[in-house]
Length: 326
Image 1 (cartoon, rainbow, N blue to C red):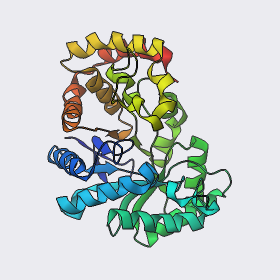
Image 2: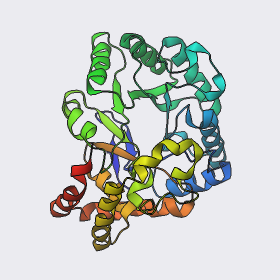
Image 3: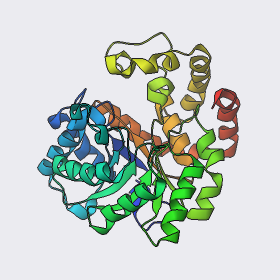
Protein backbone atom coordinates (compact mmCIF):
# COMPACT_ATOMS: atom_id res chain seq x y z
CA UNK A 1 0.00 0.00 0.00
CA UNK A 2 1.10 3.55 -0.70
CA UNK A 3 0.32 6.43 1.64
CA UNK A 4 -0.19 10.10 0.86
CA UNK A 5 -0.54 13.23 2.94
CA UNK A 6 -4.00 14.70 3.25
CA UNK A 7 -3.22 17.81 1.26
CA UNK A 8 -0.90 19.98 3.32
CA UNK A 9 -1.88 18.34 6.61
CA UNK A 10 0.51 15.96 8.32
CA UNK A 11 -1.99 13.08 8.34
CA UNK A 12 -1.18 10.23 5.94
CA UNK A 13 -3.91 8.09 4.41
CA UNK A 14 -3.77 4.97 2.27
CA UNK A 15 -4.01 5.53 -1.49
CA UNK A 16 -7.08 3.28 -1.53
CA UNK A 17 -9.65 3.50 1.26
CA UNK A 18 -12.93 1.77 2.08
CA UNK A 19 -16.30 3.53 2.21
CA UNK A 20 -19.74 2.48 3.39
CA UNK A 21 -22.16 4.39 1.14
CA UNK A 22 -25.00 2.18 -0.20
CA UNK A 23 -23.43 -1.04 1.13
CA UNK A 24 -23.57 -0.85 4.93
CA UNK A 25 -26.98 -1.95 6.27
CA UNK A 26 -28.37 -2.29 2.72
CA UNK A 27 -25.96 -5.04 1.60
CA UNK A 28 -23.42 -5.42 4.41
CA UNK A 29 -24.17 -6.40 8.02
CA UNK A 30 -21.76 -6.19 10.95
CA UNK A 31 -20.27 -9.62 10.29
CA UNK A 32 -19.49 -8.80 6.67
CA UNK A 33 -18.15 -5.39 7.68
CA UNK A 34 -15.74 -7.02 10.12
CA UNK A 35 -14.57 -9.44 7.44
CA UNK A 36 -13.98 -6.75 4.80
CA UNK A 37 -12.52 -4.13 7.11
CA UNK A 38 -10.09 -6.73 8.48
CA UNK A 39 -9.02 -7.67 4.95
CA UNK A 40 -8.65 -4.00 4.00
CA UNK A 41 -6.61 -3.28 7.12
CA UNK A 42 -4.36 -6.29 6.49
CA UNK A 43 -3.75 -4.93 2.96
CA UNK A 44 -2.65 -1.57 4.39
CA UNK A 45 -5.88 0.45 4.14
CA UNK A 46 -6.07 2.83 7.10
CA UNK A 47 -9.00 5.11 6.12
CA UNK A 48 -12.68 4.16 6.48
CA UNK A 49 -15.29 6.63 5.22
CA UNK A 50 -18.86 7.09 6.44
CA UNK A 51 -21.62 9.70 6.81
CA UNK A 52 -24.41 10.42 9.24
CA UNK A 53 -27.02 10.11 6.49
CA UNK A 54 -25.88 6.70 5.21
CA UNK A 55 -28.70 4.26 6.01
CA UNK A 56 -30.10 6.80 8.46
CA UNK A 57 -27.20 6.42 10.89
CA UNK A 58 -27.11 2.63 10.73
CA UNK A 59 -23.96 2.67 8.59
CA UNK A 60 -22.10 4.40 11.42
CA UNK A 61 -23.53 1.89 13.89
CA UNK A 62 -22.33 -1.06 11.81
CA UNK A 63 -18.87 0.41 11.33
CA UNK A 64 -18.68 1.25 15.03
CA UNK A 65 -19.65 -2.30 16.01
CA UNK A 66 -17.04 -3.66 13.58
CA UNK A 67 -14.34 -1.41 15.01
CA UNK A 68 -15.20 -2.59 18.51
CA UNK A 69 -14.80 -6.23 17.47
CA UNK A 70 -11.59 -5.59 15.55
CA UNK A 71 -10.07 -3.68 18.49
CA UNK A 72 -7.29 -2.05 16.47
CA UNK A 73 -5.02 0.52 18.14
CA UNK A 74 -6.78 3.87 17.67
CA UNK A 75 -3.71 5.47 16.15
CA UNK A 76 -3.69 2.88 13.35
CA UNK A 77 -6.88 3.88 11.54
CA UNK A 78 -8.71 6.97 10.30
CA UNK A 79 -12.51 7.30 10.40
CA UNK A 80 -14.59 9.99 8.74
CA UNK A 81 -18.20 11.12 8.73
CA UNK A 82 -20.19 13.87 7.06
CA UNK A 83 -22.99 16.22 8.17
CA UNK A 84 -25.76 18.06 6.31
CA UNK A 85 -28.85 15.97 5.58
CA UNK A 86 -29.46 14.72 9.10
CA UNK A 87 -31.05 11.38 9.91
CA UNK A 88 -34.11 9.99 8.17
CA UNK A 89 -35.50 9.13 11.59
CA UNK A 90 -35.20 12.79 12.63
CA UNK A 91 -38.53 13.44 10.91
CA UNK A 92 -39.37 17.03 10.14
CA UNK A 93 -37.22 18.69 12.82
CA UNK A 94 -36.37 21.93 11.03
CA UNK A 95 -32.88 22.31 12.48
CA UNK A 96 -31.82 18.72 11.80
CA UNK A 97 -31.90 18.40 8.03
CA UNK A 98 -30.39 20.15 5.03
CA UNK A 99 -28.43 22.57 7.17
CA UNK A 100 -25.00 23.48 8.51
CA UNK A 101 -26.15 25.74 11.31
CA UNK A 102 -24.35 25.67 14.63
CA UNK A 103 -27.14 23.93 16.57
CA UNK A 104 -27.27 21.03 14.13
CA UNK A 105 -23.51 20.56 13.77
CA UNK A 106 -22.73 20.61 17.49
CA UNK A 107 -25.38 17.95 18.14
CA UNK A 108 -24.72 15.91 15.00
CA UNK A 109 -21.11 15.19 15.96
CA UNK A 110 -22.24 13.90 19.37
CA UNK A 111 -24.68 11.54 17.67
CA UNK A 112 -22.00 10.20 15.36
CA UNK A 113 -19.61 9.67 18.25
CA UNK A 114 -22.26 7.61 20.04
CA UNK A 115 -23.00 5.50 16.98
CA UNK A 116 -19.32 4.87 16.29
CA UNK A 117 -18.50 4.30 19.96
CA UNK A 118 -15.42 6.51 19.55
CA UNK A 119 -13.97 9.34 21.62
CA UNK A 120 -13.13 11.32 18.49
CA UNK A 121 -13.65 11.20 14.73
CA UNK A 122 -10.59 11.84 12.60
CA UNK A 123 -12.19 13.65 9.65
CA UNK A 124 -15.53 15.45 9.55
CA UNK A 125 -17.05 17.00 6.45
CA UNK A 126 -19.80 19.45 5.58
CA UNK A 127 -21.56 17.04 3.22
CA UNK A 128 -22.92 19.81 1.00
CA UNK A 129 -22.90 23.61 1.08
CA UNK A 130 -25.75 25.36 2.91
CA UNK A 131 -26.86 28.56 1.14
CA UNK A 132 -29.09 29.52 4.08
CA UNK A 133 -26.47 29.55 6.85
CA UNK A 134 -23.68 32.16 6.93
CA UNK A 135 -20.39 30.49 6.04
CA UNK A 136 -18.79 32.06 9.11
CA UNK A 137 -21.30 30.30 11.40
CA UNK A 138 -20.45 26.96 9.82
CA UNK A 139 -16.70 27.57 9.95
CA UNK A 140 -16.82 28.56 13.62
CA UNK A 141 -18.90 25.49 14.53
CA UNK A 142 -16.58 23.09 12.70
CA UNK A 143 -13.54 24.76 14.22
CA UNK A 144 -15.07 24.53 17.71
CA UNK A 145 -15.73 20.81 17.25
CA UNK A 146 -12.02 20.35 16.61
CA UNK A 147 -11.02 22.59 19.52
CA UNK A 148 -13.23 20.44 21.77
CA UNK A 149 -11.33 17.32 20.66
CA UNK A 150 -14.37 15.66 19.07
CA UNK A 151 -12.70 15.66 15.64
CA UNK A 152 -9.18 16.23 14.34
CA UNK A 153 -9.63 17.74 10.85
CA UNK A 154 -12.54 19.20 8.94
CA UNK A 155 -13.36 19.70 5.31
CA UNK A 156 -16.11 19.83 2.71
CA UNK A 157 -17.82 17.58 0.19
CA UNK A 158 -19.05 18.78 -3.20
CA UNK A 159 -18.50 22.45 -2.39
CA UNK A 160 -17.64 24.94 -5.10
CA UNK A 161 -14.11 26.27 -5.23
CA UNK A 162 -15.43 29.73 -4.35
CA UNK A 163 -17.18 28.43 -1.21
CA UNK A 164 -14.14 26.45 -0.09
CA UNK A 165 -11.90 29.48 -0.50
CA UNK A 166 -14.39 31.68 1.37
CA UNK A 167 -14.47 29.23 4.29
CA UNK A 168 -10.68 28.98 4.35
CA UNK A 169 -10.25 32.76 4.31
CA UNK A 170 -12.73 33.23 7.17
CA UNK A 171 -10.81 30.66 9.23
CA UNK A 172 -7.50 32.34 8.35
CA UNK A 173 -8.80 35.80 9.26
CA UNK A 174 -10.21 34.72 12.64
CA UNK A 175 -7.43 32.22 13.54
CA UNK A 176 -9.82 29.25 13.38
CA UNK A 177 -9.17 25.67 12.26
CA UNK A 178 -9.17 25.69 8.45
CA UNK A 179 -10.80 23.19 6.10
CA UNK A 180 -8.04 20.91 4.83
CA UNK A 181 -9.81 18.45 2.53
CA UNK A 182 -12.65 18.14 0.02
CA UNK A 183 -14.52 14.97 -0.95
CA UNK A 184 -15.62 15.32 -4.59
CA UNK A 185 -16.91 12.80 -7.07
CA UNK A 186 -14.07 11.95 -9.46
CA UNK A 187 -13.86 9.35 -12.20
CA UNK A 188 -13.17 9.05 -15.93
CA UNK A 189 -16.52 10.61 -16.84
CA UNK A 190 -16.58 13.28 -14.11
CA UNK A 191 -13.41 15.38 -14.11
CA UNK A 192 -13.83 19.12 -14.44
CA UNK A 193 -14.32 20.00 -10.77
CA UNK A 194 -11.13 18.20 -9.68
CA UNK A 195 -9.00 19.01 -12.70
CA UNK A 196 -10.17 22.56 -13.48
CA UNK A 197 -12.36 24.21 -10.83
CA UNK A 198 -10.16 23.28 -7.87
CA UNK A 199 -6.84 23.69 -9.68
CA UNK A 200 -5.84 26.90 -7.86
CA UNK A 201 -6.76 25.54 -4.43
CA UNK A 202 -4.11 22.82 -4.34
CA UNK A 203 -1.25 25.29 -4.32
CA UNK A 204 -3.00 28.25 -2.70
CA UNK A 205 -4.46 26.54 0.39
CA UNK A 206 -3.03 23.01 0.22
CA UNK A 207 -6.37 21.28 -0.39
CA UNK A 208 -6.38 17.48 -0.10
CA UNK A 209 -8.88 15.21 -1.87
CA UNK A 210 -10.65 12.07 -0.64
CA UNK A 211 -12.51 11.22 -3.84
CA UNK A 212 -15.67 9.14 -4.15
CA UNK A 213 -17.38 7.07 -6.88
CA UNK A 214 -14.20 6.10 -8.80
CA UNK A 215 -16.21 3.47 -10.70
CA UNK A 216 -19.11 5.84 -11.48
CA UNK A 217 -21.41 3.70 -9.28
CA UNK A 218 -20.42 0.60 -11.25
CA UNK A 219 -20.64 1.98 -14.80
CA UNK A 220 -16.87 1.63 -15.20
CA UNK A 221 -16.94 -2.07 -14.31
CA UNK A 222 -18.78 -2.81 -17.56
CA UNK A 223 -21.64 -4.64 -15.86
CA UNK A 224 -24.32 -2.23 -17.09
CA UNK A 225 -23.66 -2.64 -20.80
CA UNK A 226 -26.64 -4.99 -21.15
CA UNK A 227 -28.99 -3.31 -18.68
CA UNK A 228 -29.24 -3.37 -14.89
CA UNK A 229 -28.30 -6.78 -13.44
CA UNK A 230 -30.15 -8.11 -10.40
CA UNK A 231 -28.35 -7.51 -7.13
CA UNK A 232 -26.35 -4.57 -8.48
CA UNK A 233 -26.31 -1.08 -7.03
CA UNK A 234 -28.49 0.16 -9.86
CA UNK A 235 -31.12 -2.43 -9.00
CA UNK A 236 -31.60 -1.11 -5.46
CA UNK A 237 -34.87 0.76 -5.07
CA UNK A 238 -33.25 3.72 -3.30
CA UNK A 239 -30.66 4.00 -6.09
CA UNK A 240 -33.17 4.35 -8.93
CA UNK A 241 -31.91 7.88 -9.64
CA UNK A 242 -28.63 6.37 -10.91
CA UNK A 243 -30.11 4.14 -13.59
CA UNK A 244 -30.20 6.53 -16.54
CA UNK A 245 -26.52 7.32 -16.09
CA UNK A 246 -25.55 3.68 -15.60
CA UNK A 247 -27.23 2.58 -18.83
CA UNK A 248 -26.06 5.55 -20.94
CA UNK A 249 -25.30 4.04 -24.38
CA UNK A 250 -22.40 6.36 -25.29
CA UNK A 251 -20.62 5.86 -21.98
CA UNK A 252 -21.12 2.11 -22.04
CA UNK A 253 -19.68 2.03 -25.56
CA UNK A 254 -16.65 3.94 -24.27
CA UNK A 255 -16.29 1.46 -21.40
CA UNK A 256 -16.18 -1.38 -23.94
CA UNK A 257 -13.28 0.38 -25.70
CA UNK A 258 -11.38 0.55 -22.40
CA UNK A 259 -11.54 -3.21 -21.87
CA UNK A 260 -8.67 -4.08 -24.28
CA UNK A 261 -6.47 -1.47 -22.56
CA UNK A 262 -7.17 -3.00 -19.15
CA UNK A 263 -6.39 -6.45 -20.54
CA UNK A 264 -3.09 -5.26 -22.02
CA UNK A 265 -2.08 -3.99 -18.57
CA UNK A 266 -3.08 -7.26 -16.93
CA UNK A 267 -6.08 -5.85 -15.08
CA UNK A 268 -9.84 -5.49 -15.15
CA UNK A 269 -11.94 -2.50 -16.15
CA UNK A 270 -12.58 -1.70 -12.50
CA UNK A 271 -8.90 -1.87 -11.63
CA UNK A 272 -8.05 0.39 -14.56
CA UNK A 273 -10.63 2.98 -13.47
CA UNK A 274 -9.42 2.93 -9.85
CA UNK A 275 -5.79 3.20 -10.88
CA UNK A 276 -6.60 6.14 -13.17
CA UNK A 277 -8.05 8.12 -10.25
CA UNK A 278 -5.15 7.18 -7.96
CA UNK A 279 -2.67 8.26 -10.64
CA UNK A 280 -3.67 11.90 -10.08
CA UNK A 281 -1.15 13.27 -7.52
CA UNK A 282 -3.77 15.69 -6.19
CA UNK A 283 -5.84 12.75 -4.91
CA UNK A 284 -4.96 11.86 -1.32
CA UNK A 285 -7.08 8.70 -1.27
CA UNK A 286 -9.57 6.93 -3.54
CA UNK A 287 -12.64 5.77 -1.61
CA UNK A 288 -13.70 2.34 -2.84
CA UNK A 289 -16.84 0.39 -1.96
CA UNK A 290 -17.53 -3.32 -1.78
CA UNK A 291 -20.46 -5.52 -0.84
CA UNK A 292 -18.44 -8.76 -0.91
CA UNK A 293 -14.90 -9.74 0.10
CA UNK A 294 -13.84 -10.88 -3.42
CA UNK A 295 -14.89 -7.46 -4.75
CA UNK A 296 -12.68 -5.73 -2.19
CA UNK A 297 -9.76 -8.01 -2.97
CA UNK A 298 -10.14 -7.34 -6.69
CA UNK A 299 -10.19 -3.58 -6.11
CA UNK A 300 -6.86 -3.81 -4.27
CA UNK A 301 -5.34 -5.12 -7.50
CA UNK A 302 -5.63 -1.60 -8.94
CA UNK A 303 -2.40 -0.72 -7.15
CA UNK A 304 -0.51 -3.06 -9.49
CA UNK A 305 -1.57 -0.97 -12.49
CA UNK A 306 -0.37 2.41 -11.23
CA UNK A 307 3.13 2.19 -12.69
CA UNK A 308 1.73 0.84 -15.96
CA UNK A 309 -0.29 4.00 -16.59
CA UNK A 310 2.34 5.69 -18.74
CA UNK A 311 1.67 8.99 -20.52
CA UNK A 312 0.96 7.02 -23.69
CA UNK A 313 -1.61 4.78 -21.97
CA UNK A 314 -3.24 7.78 -20.27
CA UNK A 315 -3.53 9.52 -23.65
CA UNK A 316 -5.34 6.49 -25.08
CA UNK A 317 -7.74 6.47 -22.13
CA UNK A 318 -8.36 10.20 -22.49
CA UNK A 319 -9.15 9.88 -26.18
CA UNK A 320 -11.95 7.46 -25.32
CA UNK A 321 -13.43 9.05 -22.20
CA UNK A 322 -12.62 12.76 -22.08
CA UNK A 323 -15.14 13.79 -24.79
CA UNK A 324 -17.91 12.32 -22.61
CA UNK A 325 -16.70 13.76 -19.29
CA UNK A 326 -18.37 16.55 -17.36
